[in-house]
Amino acid sequence: MSQKFNSPAAFRVADLPQNRETAFELRPDRSELEMLARDLDLLGVRKVSLIGTLTASGKTDWALRARLGATVVQPCIVSLEPVTTRIEADIERHFLALMPELEDDEEIEMPEDENAELLGNEIDVSATLSEALALNLPLYPRAPDAELNKTGFTEPGKQAMTDEDARPFAGLASLRDMLGEKDKK
Image 1 (spheres, rainbow, N blue to C red):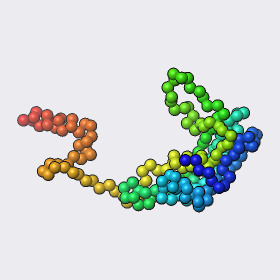
Image 2: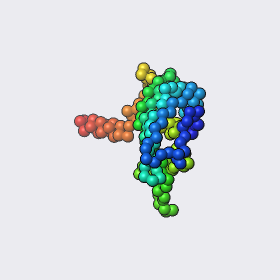
Image 3: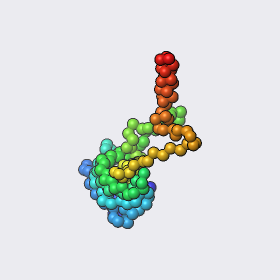
Image 4: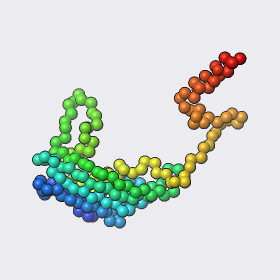
């Protein structure tokens, strides 16, 4: 999902100054926004920006700190009507020249720093923007007036099972009630 934007969005690591931060501001143009919307399966994307800095971290590593701002339009999970959401998120990535190595018999676990990435020849800010936007999208966008209607299906003459009936201890509650009625007799 790594888009290449028309605007300057990749920094050659060899050209970055070690003693001061490098500021960047990425604002995709209309065609790039359409590409983002298509790649992320959105109805629309507008007002996207990633503003931040790249800073040397030690002798070989780099840190990216930025603020993502975007307005996205997604289909409502209930009604499929367009839902507009404003996203504001702080983004942090650590580009490491050497990633921690794992032993052959060691289980693979989540690294301590989930924002760590292997440093290459370039730091592609457009790829960071695309990834950060994808990670910050609402999973279940819902229009304010959208409601799920309850529908029950069962054989004629029987009562439909409800969500309450499906709970793990619902059967125990009915058994308790039945036993309580027998004790009263």
